[in-house]
Length: 410
Image (cartoon, rainbow, N blue to C red; front, side, top):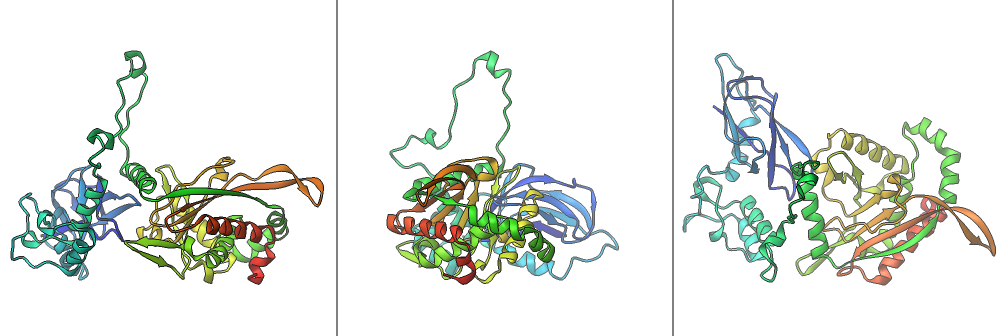
């Protein structure tokens, strides 16, 4: 009997929702054939069959939430069916500590050993492992159990808040209006986006500073070389590559914007993984272009183009949306003239790009029409001072208005 379990979902992801089963109990399955779709707060993934045979049992139904390592179903290997792949056995064993017990009476015994990761989380969060239901073998508390308990505690309403305030409820509509309404259950992705954005507002001391940039130089450079660029590198020369390069340079000059808080410590990151927000039908996702300081403009544009295509196809991997140190969001593609982007926690800064619009500007004492863009930097004031935020944004502006600096590293 081969077990189907929730695979490791990536950093900080401890649970998923069953999107849909592709097979039903009694169906024959082949090795690596997709069996069930899982939705997380980041991506949708498919769980393949670990062995060939017959799907004998489905433990969880569509719409239910499951933890990493939880049992999803079982496959009865049929006569003559190929054995499970060699990698499947170690994978099942690796997932065993996070096994979801079918009964709720999974509290750890008093003499059950506590894993070092559990002890560390207990010390950092103040959560007592003995109060956490264990889903591991013999009722042991796993790291996933602790993370879930800590997240539940953080999401719980404070004593001064009314419990009902945690969920927004509306008053009933008049009968005539109700007949013309459509009620649709929020997807897990949309629920998590809503929760995390609100958490970012509640946790960070978020402020936004604005500036504007004259895009004449970048547009001239782009128009002059876009055909040659595309012919040589096989990708279009857009604006985002220039912004990524400018932000990396500014992050080097103002490292606080590339830092994050860890308890009572500040972590300054000497690497530059820039998240580029991409809108999809299911919601906003932020794939991360890694080591942007080590990549050419062409390499950055290729990464962005590929991520954008795969994001719209729903083919991004979890690890491709983790580890970002700074984020850029381009509301200008939708016509936004100005906005205040929300931080992508735990990052301390996010740059908002906007629509390029011709406006009259005073240049050398004369009024000229210039293509202008408003820039917005939202930042965590707990880490970044106002002076640093303004310095960062002015640095980005200066680099874009004189893009030769990006090449000369000035």
